[in-house]
Image 1: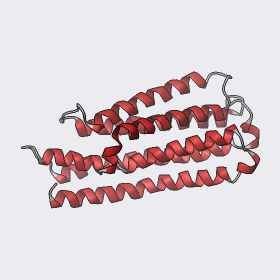
Image 2: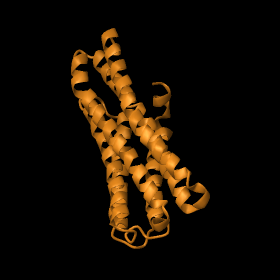
Image 3: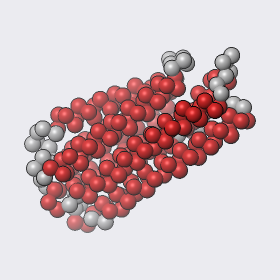
Image 4: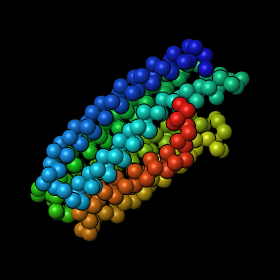
Length: 229
């Protein structure tokens, strides 16, 4: 990577991390609000909250490393006869990264809303579809925002790998992993929403477990990429 490209990449990375921090702040606010109620709600709802909180935090940690994908992208083109222009990278990928940080912020904001609702007294023991229309809609919106975040990241990675060799690359695994779990969460949302078989916290536990497994497989398969970034 040239000195100019390195400087431009550093600016992109710094701005992206600052924007993601706004989402992390919302996640922290939601966590603080929910844990303040813990003494009166020890049990499965608390476990669901913990699983969901950790899974979102792991997803956010992975997104913090996303800017390094641009570094690899620029390095690949630097070694070819068609080097990429740094201003083109900024023109396209900076707005995309900003969009990704916005979607993550919405996921964290949605977590803050649903966890407060589900851990409240009227909704804690009620089936989600019985607990007024608001909570049911909040839970459904949260699941779709998580799906949007996974799909958004996958399609951005596709844009980075469009003219590169896919086989064996970490990006190829991330794309397949994110799209697979986006599909699973979508199927879960459609399967659970119309039924009366699952309580609100059970649905949240399922979403949290799926998102957590997405990160587990990600770190299991490509942890060296993160460590060497």
